[in-house]
Length: 207
Image 1 (cartoon, rainbow, N blue to C red):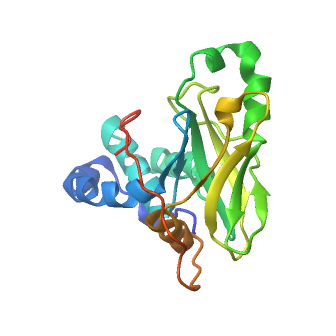
Image 2 (spheres, rainbow, N blue to C red; image 1 turned 45 degrees about the horizontal axis):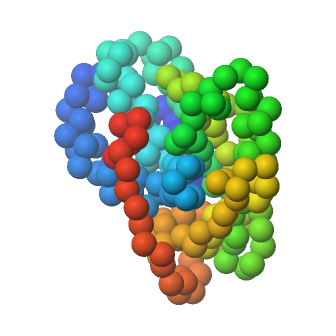
Image 3 (cartoon, rainbow, N blue to C red; image 1 turned 90 degrees about the vertical axis):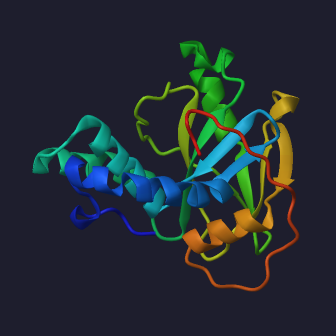
């Protein structure tokens, strides 16, 4: 994935002209990158086009026009785009009432460190937690995770968090999910494995 550059963004007048086009394209991009682990955790994987759409949405809503404001949007959102050989996602704790308390921050960090992907070569890679602020989200309910995948796409996602059995599970990614993340890694490999069924939920306005 590539980072956003100045030519990717436009002022709010131009954004208004693109709003309908973005509304049509985004759901198709987001759907296979929205991955559940049980009914407690949701992982929102991002790529360049999704982040670009977020930036243009912010520009349109805030009616940004100046060059300084446009460049600031790129600066804020670019860290959400994975570097080469990586995947990045936002982890949402669906049952997050207790996790929102300040004293639960360490427990959240412990949970994040137990999230992993199983890659197509059989390796298990655990999440890293880069220090990235996420606008308009409570710091304990949403966080960005990074997975270093090199040249292999994920086929499963799981957690070995033993302190709470509700968060200790592993699930196979659907064929569509594997394909989407494979595309984000710019990998062209063999056939993908069998799929588990996908579930959908509308949370925090995610399409």
